[in-house]
Structure formats: C-alpha cells, structure tokens
Amino acid sequence: MDYVLETRGLTKEFKGFVAVNKLDFRVRRGTIHALIGPNGAGKTTVFNLLTKFLVPTSGHIYYHGDDITAASPGAIARRGIVRSFQISAVFPHLTVLENVRVALQRHTPTTYHFWRSESVLDSLNDRARELLEQVGLLRYETAMAGELPYGRKRALEIATTLALDPDTLLLDEPMAGMGHEDIRRVADLIRRVAEGRTVVMVEHNLSVVADLSDTITVLQRGEILAEGTYAEVSNNPEVREAYMGTAHV
Image (cartoon, rainbow, N blue to C red; front, side, top):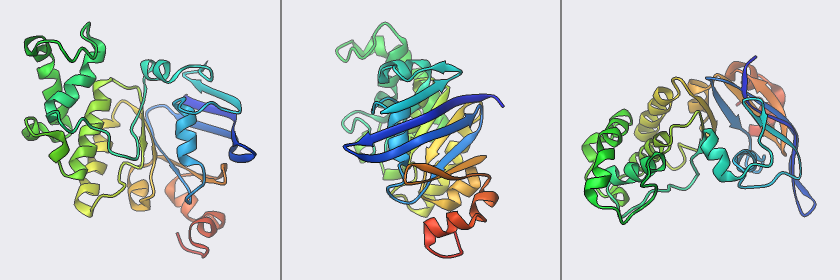
C-alpha cells in the first residue's frame, strides 16, 4: 500500500492523562479517510499532533515516508499538509475574493504584504476566481466574508486551503453546526476537491462519513477501536457499544 501519512506509536500525555496512546495510523494516498469516535476519543488531538500544533510525548509521524515528527507547523504546511479548524476562520471584514487572495499570496513575492497596492494584488484575481468557482462562491466574490451564511463560510475556508495547493487536506468537523442543505452542499464540495488529493476528516455526522469515506478509523480513549469500510465498522459490536451503548450505530 502507498501510505501518504503514517504514525507509529504516537502518544500524547497531558499531566498524566493519556489522550492518544501508541497510535499506529495509516492513510492511503488519494483516499478520503474519516477519523471518528465518541466525544473525548482523541480525534482533534490526533489532528493537532499531525499538524504540529501539539508536540508528541513519544512516537513518530511520517509523510511520504519522511519523518516529520520534529517539523514546525509552518514546515508541515509548506510540505503540503493543510488543515481547517472546527471554528470558522475567515477574515470577516475582507471580501470573499480578498480572503482567497490573501492565501494565494503565499506563492508570490508579495507574501502577506497587506499594504501592497490593489494593482499588484489584482494579478491574483483570476486564480482566486477559479477557486471560488470550484467551491460555488464566485457570485459572492464581492460580499463581505463575515456576512456569509455559515455553510458558505465553510466553503470559503476550503477555497482558502485549496489556494495553498495542498497535497493532503485535514478537515476538522467540516459539517459542524450546519443544516441539511449546507451539509449536502459541503459534502459535494469535499468530494470534488478530493480528486487528486488525500483528505483526512474528523466528522460526527455518520451519514456523511458513510457517503464520503473510503476508510474509517474509529478511536476510543486515544486508541484504534476498529478500522475499515463503513459497512465493516458499523457492524462491529464494539463500535456500536462505544457510540450508542446498544446494538445499533
């Protein structure tokens, strides 16, 4: 198997509490891999370890076969691992187009020079509009980002992450707080942007997980409880017990 992301014995302790315990986790290249589990299972901690917002207590992280355990968050992002967060993170007082343009500046000599003239930054507009069209937001390009409905803010976040040209995209609860229509729209978007990329997502909505995921890893108390397709994990009695305390998932 061609694994793009892998952990070996990954462990994180917080003052005696083991949040992630000797985790051996592998993600195949070009797949959508869901990380699920009850509240407190360690899912977001794993994301924070993978993107180096937390330092492991022990163990190793590999990306394309290279040990990245000691790399900084910035170095991780430059290597092509880009993540979203549970809380919507856009620049509310910039337009939709300007939000994407800020992300595109990483690839230019004008990197994050907010004081540059409009004419200099206009060179990024065509690519920004391509990304907005990809996520269904082109008609909102002049709207202030803070005025967007929640589901469209999440779509804008995905556009800004795509502007960083990620190889691997980590999505932390992309459907959190959404209604049915927004969930359907963002699920379709994730399916589209996953083409040619690897996607790892933490998600509580099991219907979304069932629809999108090639592989599902179920965590419980920082350890892998089960792994496989949705059919395989949903028929696992231990998974049923962990989620519902009953025989149904």
